[in-house]
Image (cartoon, rainbow, N blue to C red; front, side):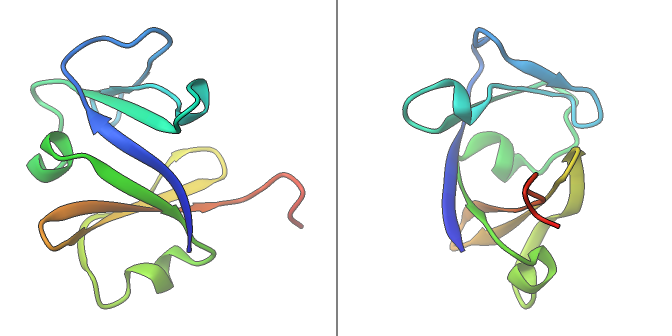
Length: 108
């Protein structure tokens, strides 16, 4: 497991944010700032858990997302928000934690 980014909920639009229609949220890329922050702005009818919408999350890159979530309290099942990425969220002591399994371009 390797640290990847932190995600912070916001109610304010962020320059360059992208809309994810399936999740009814806007997000900024963690690559767009020096600190690895992903800003998340949720629509009122976003289907994600309230915990994810209201509490900052920390994200880790993992080799096998299904192994990483095994035995954990899964609050968002593995899904594919973008090409080459699988994400899932767990709850750990009242805080959301995101796991990302990323297929890197140089991987075979």
